Length: 289
Ligand SMILES: [Zn+2]
Image (cartoon, rainbow, N blue to C red; front, top):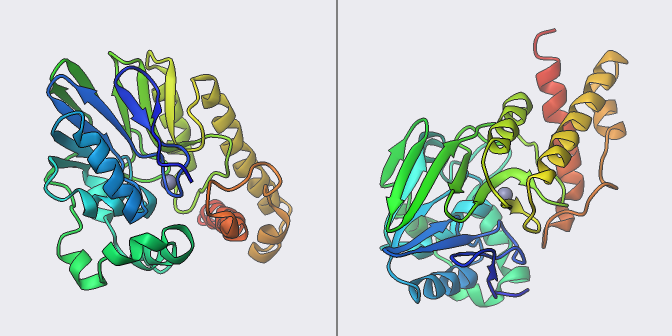
């Protein structure tokens, strides 16, 4: 598991080789903007140190509220202002019937970051200051940081507060999990129709590189691959409903496990992903009947 950052452009760095999301930062003439944080504690501390060698951290933006994009914020306390869409802020580290995010972060430590155990906070300490948004917005926001424009574009679908972070001067966009590049798509509680519209919006941007939420850096051609993956899931479950299959039958028979691996370190979640994807679509498609 490498902690080396990949240089996407002169000023844009990411790491697609960690368990968790693809944490990234952009170096401007007036400090650093961090986009998502490493889930694993030692990696979060390392990335903060590395980012700070390029200047003070001015802002930290999270592209979504899922644990793999936000847990590392704790290790960035005191490093610039945290900017959240209202939808990220409202769902930040909230325990749901499906998932206790703190427990999920803790579960990764023995296998994926044993050295992180020493700096892993207990639950009470963590929740006292998880480093949640200082600045919270709805709609879109544009930041001017040094010579860089940083456009925070609301692209809901995968999650309600989903953001794309567009850097026109670098011709790069960070999409969070609106794009799962060459790995399994987690639908969870997403809204697939909104998600398809989000792909359209990202398609309008003038970029050479897309830094996805998971998997290798890609380009705009992958928007159509992601679209196709979403449509295939939706069509397959719609077909199951039309066939009169039960929820259980649908979960059993609709499965795209052979399509892609799960992103790094989470292979054991494959059945969980297939089950939740099919179940959540089934519930949505049958909600009106
Ligand atoms: Zn993610």
